[in-house]
Image (cartoon, rainbow, N blue to C red; front, side, top):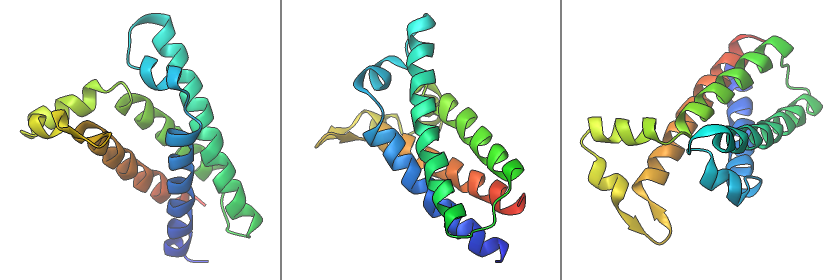
Length: 141
């Protein structure tokens, strides 16, 4: 199986795991508490990261069951990068700062229908990081 085919399969699996982990298995307490201060914020973040990456590991395990060749080192690199980038972005200040730097602060503040610019930027940055994770896993197999 080519690196490109492995990359495509891994990206799809990580994307599915992302949506499950970020939108279904994340608790309200985790979602509202992970960007605060002190021990409660870090506990909320740790709980979210554990559930999120359990979802990603499960989707990657599904690929293994289908015979997609993945290595333990590649999976560790991909999930490690995912955990670090996800924790960084979910502190929210990095996303807010990037939007300010790009002149998009008004977009971030715009709300409507339950989805706002800050959420969309956060999700877009997560997907970009999933792309890097998929590349790591495809190249380190």
